[in-house]
Length: 195
Ligand SMILES: Cc1cc2nc3c(=O)[nH]c(=O)nc-3n(C[C@H](O)[C@H](O)[C@H](O)COP(=O)(O)O)c2cc1C
Image (tube, rainbow, N blue to C red; front, top):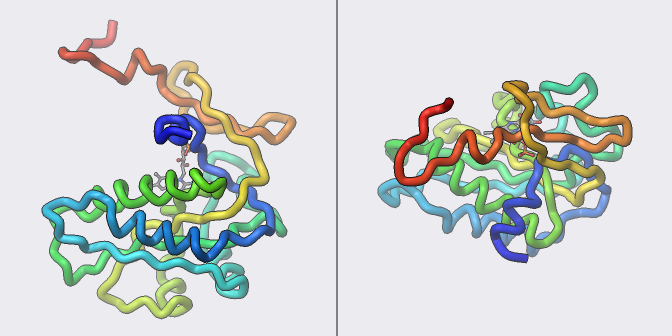
């Protein structure tokens, strides 16, 4: 599969099988984050893999899922089997750490998907309890948690109708993600004003 194929295929997945993510792959994900582009090469980011089943079970209640859906969180038995947390070391002065996080996150997501492991970026987190639980020093901030696991749902992108950005699930449980039409958000040479 090409990188573009993976980009087309990647959707946020919020239901997982119980098969653990291989440790060698998690190690690869940490490395993919480490090697991502970084503004001015300051490298303020660190990456924490969580795969201990008991710790994963303790992380899960601090994550928030699919705010547009009434019942969007993984049900018991569908929880992620691993997480990669992206941490920002506040002692390393970076002009744009959030942009660094974005680059690292996508590198990690695509590396995982290349080996069949999917998941969801979770920005909506109870951060405070995670510091104690995972022993993270106070001069770090937790930017994102990347929940990982083998997918147990189907999610598809579709062309957005109007301005409704809300993803939805159909009766078969397929998760639909509206994306703005290509012609509306891409431009060539000169910015094309909307008609
Ligand atoms: C920075 C960021 C934070 C996100 N936080 C959450 C979150 O807390 N919970 C969740 O269920 N999804 C979260 N998502 C996933 C988005 O809802 C998802 O990317 C969006 O609906 C588009 O779907 P797609 O990833 O399948 O293209 C987050 C995504 C990003 C990029």
